[in-house]
Image (cartoon, rainbow, N blue to C red):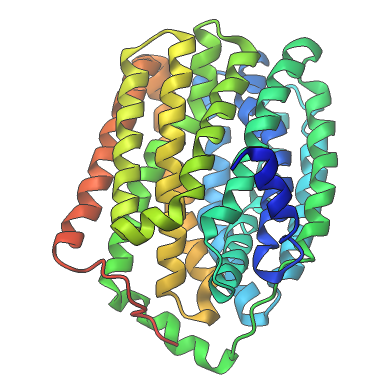
Length: 399
């Protein structure tokens, strides 16, 4: 089926509760694709060092680690998921708009902190609402998330061409305006209804799920690997002379390569199993980062980025689905947030400042080789408990 036919078919279903995550992901990742692939290039053009870029990049992981689980916990306990999601999006749009003004590290620091606090609960809350609704209505989560990959790819590609000619100033205005439809779509997501009286006992049993603990530990390592990529891949392309167009292509083509994998994720999961799908994704990530380390041609980097996108799609859909299958209803947002905190919080928080120092001292090819090694270690960490039967797909955390 062609992309146009797929879009027409999807539009006919998007009014149904189980499919409302698709338009949400479409507009959310479109807004993110306008600005996030180019943010560190903006900092680089302002004259910030690799270490300073690493520090700014570590703020978001810090808030993801500290703020995300805490805010998601409140959202679950108070049943305020949609309310918190809406106002976090509103604040994020305003913070992105203001980011166009500072020109120094000291001026950027507080705004990056504000953006990090506001964004920390957005992904785990939205993912939990959408994944649980998809499961309830028998819809493959990957068929919803792929629309985010598509929109991120398109806005990254278009943004790369535009910011190459116009500079970065209009980028912040466009991204802030792009958050407005995301706020609207967040109000249309289906709310989870749970019994609060069952929740405290359920969360205490997280430590008893050894498979979940293994997944969180592996997620930490792949998050460290991904953090190096997200922070420095655009800078690497810029250093090699690729410019903003190829930087946009780097992220855009990677996102496009996610789409067929996400569309097939339901079939892949049923064929291999969710945990095996995650493991395969880790392997593709490792190969792509070793390719980054070995090849210094801007155009070829785009090909490795596409392989990386395929790996990302496999482990993202598999991980979110695993958490949804193992989590009790009352702690869906909280446990998704713990996974996000491990991958995009604790891991980059530890590694990004170190990665900035390594990029200054050893160079970016060596940095990507280290990222590949971390992805291999993540695969080993997940593979060992799989062999021991700890990753069997059953709800060990029944509420």
